[in-house]
Amino acid sequence: MTEPRLSAALQRIAPSQTTAMTDRATELRAQGRDIISLSVGEPDFDTPAHVVEAMKAALDAGQTRYTSVGGTAAMKRAAALHFERDLGIATDTAHVTISAGGKQAIFHALMATIDPGDEVVIPAPWWVSYPEIVRFAGGTVVTLPTQPENGFRFSAAELEAVITLKTRWLLMNSPGNPTGAVFTAEDLTAIAEVLDRHPQVLVMSDDIYAPLTYTGAPHATLTALRPDLADRVLTVSGVSKSHAMTGLRIGVATGPQWLIRAMEKLQSHSSGNPCSISQAGAVAAFEGPQDFLADWRETFRRRRELVVARVNAIPGLSTPVPQGAFYCFIDAAPLIGDKVADDGALALHLLEHGVAVVAASAFGGTHCGLAGFRISFAASEAQLTEAMDRIEKAVAAL
Image 1: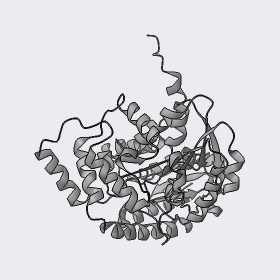
Image 2: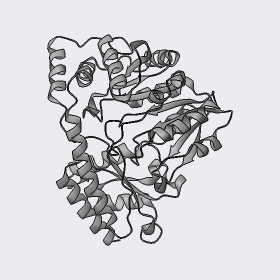
Image 3: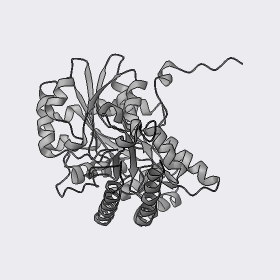
């Protein structure tokens, strides 16, 4: 049989290594193995009760039909409330769209705007899907390396050095996955001054982890600081991380109306509307009580301190203190080449010792001279303690 022909676009991308490792951990569990998965970015808390009740009520009311492609009117109003109250971005429903997760919003925005030859600046380490979506769209990834000693943040001067006339987008993620990097208001103000000199550059501001910062300062985002740049910035958010609704697949985005319309045009031919029941839950999530977030944030802070202390006590491993999100990006360079071939082999070694992590190379770590792995501390303290015990033993066994 002749091997099926896949599109050139599909052959330009690699599968997500985070989901691949999570799937492998699930397979091993099904075989009876005791695996602690720290590979996926998913809060381990229950979805808030008022959100669950809203979805039950929507089901009872028969809200199982198509909605508008870009979301219900109620959902768009709730998203606009979220952007203004939580991110400081004044917007309205004409500038808001709803998608099946933040990833879909990013995918549609890039697919709608990138042509072959367009360049997209992506700070590294990066979330695994950013470069793959750009490549699928036919764009060229321009890497902007960052380092732990700078909090994995790039400077305005470093950004300007990589911008060309072909630059179409800058992708930003703060707090960041996989590093927990948090850009300050001062950082963003300086970056905005660079953007002033390069009006062809659009900005993707991925703020999905905004509720989870540990700096004590308010979350800073570009459009809130510089509203005059709103016609060039797409801000993406959602309920997955803030309300433990990962499987319900609701993302929200606000930006210039021309881009919102383009994204909805593409969505009309891909998935159609987001899940009607999930939208009802997301309305309740944004419009309902938010006080539980302080407790969640404090729990994550304790877990962060536990993991950072344990990692930095293991010979050959080190990690900076992440300023947001729920990840530690761990440097294992002293082990690579001496004890193990590369960080992919190290991740497999840890999996054999019962802990699923994701190699740093999956996040573009090699572009920054970094080798190691990312772990999520969105797990109970008991699980994290046991996982760190296993990691310590696994490293000692190399």
